[in-house]
Image (cartoon, rainbow, N blue to C red; front, side, top):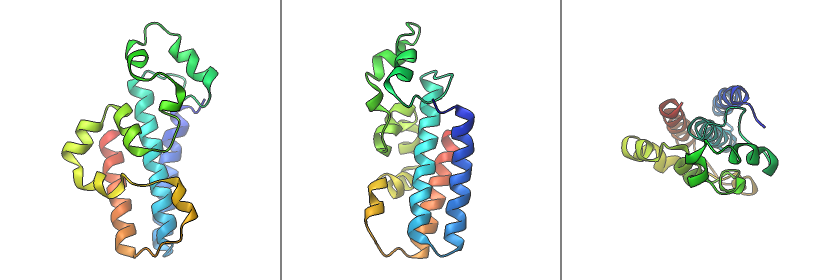
Length: 148
């Protein structure tokens, strides 16, 4: 179980790391860590909307402790298995976070800039310019500030 307080701490640390990497001209790494910060923020929101009071579940037994609670009607009607939320796909996490309408309606440009982020990009070696990394980081921050 990842406690909500730990998620929030990690979000802030990844954003600080991302800013340091931008300053250090490590643009691809800046984007990479900013994407993780956004993933963590969406999982933080999922904890809130799904009433994951002990934190974000990391395995099936932890998830089942929430799922077996008959008072969690929204959870039972929305998420069937832990694999529905235990991944890195930002569009799916946004949907489960309860913030999809808000983000897509009011922060569409920012979302368009970040929604294709994937940890699998670590296997690539793209050339990233400072402006693109700075825009990605700013878009990430804007969305995180809107949902947390």
